[in-house]
Image (cartoon, rainbow, N blue to C red; front, side):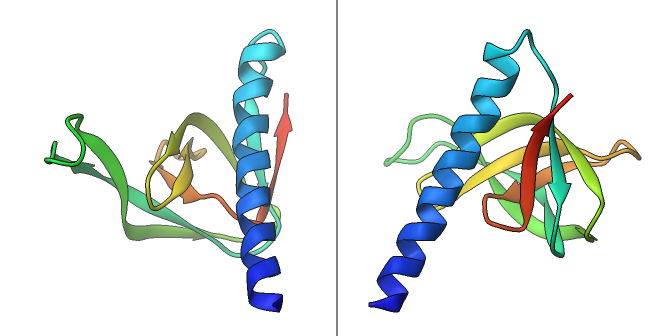
Length: 112
């Protein structure tokens, strides 16, 4: 039972974060959404996925880990991906690196 409630909480958290990330830039005069890291969080490369019989549109999926952010770090969101197997924020780091952070409970979304 704990496993089911944990998974539900994780999915609910991911959905809430994604909804918030879309609402903040669109609904608040294009305010910038920032992820404030609370726990070690991996930033993945963005691998292109070609169209397939299941999906006629090319897409993006998380690739290898390019950096791990630590508590107190921030990342500016530049996009949101909702995939079949994952939900993620496309982020741009202060050094210009871009990648994907998978939705989870390792960060808070704030706006500036």
